[in-house]
Amino acid sequence: MNKYLLGAAALAFSAPAASASITVDGQIDAGYGAASATVATDPNAPDSNFQAPENRALAGYDIYLSSDASNVYGLVDLTGGNSAGNFANLYFDLNPTVGDGSDLGFEIGQNGVTAFIPGKNGQPGFNTVLGASNYAVALVPGGGLEFSLAKSLFTSPIAGLAYYDGQTFEGTITLRLSQSLSYSVAGGASYGPNRLGAIQLAAVPEPASWALMISGFAIAGAAARRRSHSTMAFA
Image (cartoon, rainbow, N blue to C red; front, side, top):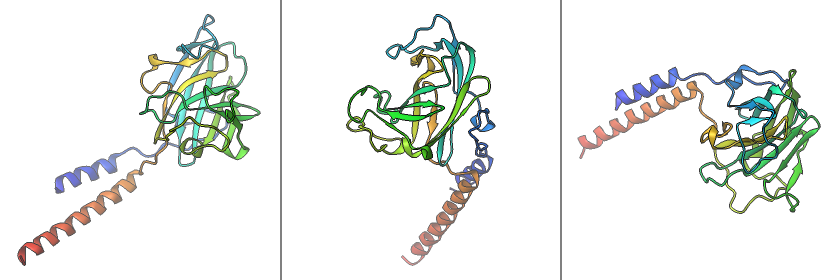
């Protein structure tokens, strides 16, 4: 038993530290790490191709995603082609294990953010404009935009939206589709199971927290062994 606890403790102390903080200022902060997806520039790419998303667009870009205790962060960085504007229409899967496709979308631009339910265009509860306290948006100097969205928007229903029956919320979400900087739609199976990127919403203990947890388990285990020995002695 002890050797397993020691091994777990060593793993806890060797775990990487949490990523650096992110400021929504149009810069690719270190906290993002590598791009979660790349959309190639192609002047022949289709547009409004929601039923057949591809890995190319009229305006190519890289996507960066991250999260912390309060927000989900994203940055769309123009890499080529002709941009139709600094906007991002993003489609998220709130429960990837269910396999029911995109559940929640956001239209993000300089003038605000609108949340919507994909496939319910024109129906009651299709969309709602978010209050300014729920997001931040900044332009990327070379083209594109950066944003933050309150994590609560992904973990519980947004007031005013009519979700599909049985909607559930999971600890990890995926970005399935992106119609950003042009009207070409990026996404699809060619990107793999996480599509354009997975975002972890559930909190992960810091290395120090893991160490404390392991220490607690070790103390509890020692106490249990002492109780076991004592019971056997007096049985």
